[in-house]
Length: 346
Image (tube, rainbow, N blue to C red; front, side, top):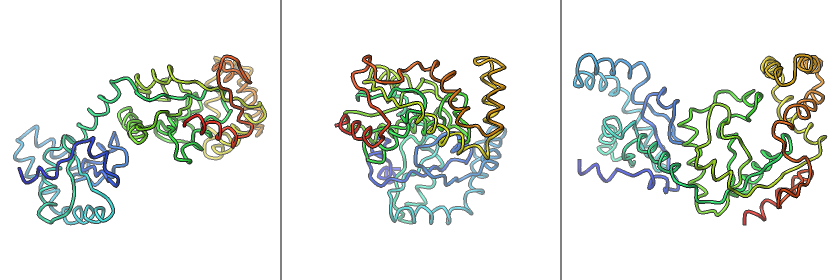
């Protein structure tokens, strides 16, 4: 046991490694629910195997379950060890299971015998989850710069350009895999579980922890099915708010190009259902008119009506320069807007 201690590494120390590759040894279903951001899944037990072992553990004994589990794992060990050895050529492999117990310790023993470099995460995924909860239980220390503005002014585009420049910004919608509102999930697939979303956000925060400012887009606390942690959302509310504004023609084109046309072929039914979902807000007559325009490929007209009759009244941000904001940025010239934001970050 003392010999294995040299392989143990804590969560915070693991995140300090420059070339770390987390390796999740849990079953695919456990990995799918939540995992350390950037981890790859090399399961010791497949989902059906884990279920069998768990049943034996509950109905018979831990010893019998251990024997059954070893029978499943033993034939896989050469391949698993080879994968971890190859990963070790370029990265520091950090293996973990649920609590840093039997699964990861057993594999660490084998890797040690074969002189394959690795670390074993102390406390496993549970330790990482506790680390996330502890992090977001404290007031957020950095200043959060929040981009306010009406739908379609290009807030997400600005965030992505700032990220490309290597400057501190977090695309919350990308982490949540949802753009918000009734159209937010169209064409994006499944959202992460809440636990995994929080882990993704933590990883982004840790990468930028030495920066005084972080830029985000204005969001409701809830993005689709996930929620922004309360302390981070409080920092957003109390942060520096900047108004992004653009002319209606550009907003219509941006939304039409980025959301409607891009998602149209594969998701016509989803878009149609989302429009129908607004009938309580817009009335049946107006909703039917939108469906008619959509079916006749009048996408720009559909977007214009949605912006003017639904999104703009809903979010109620100014549509042009406003004295309510100390800083106003026009996104008519996106390159100029990026330069202004870059100068503000410092």
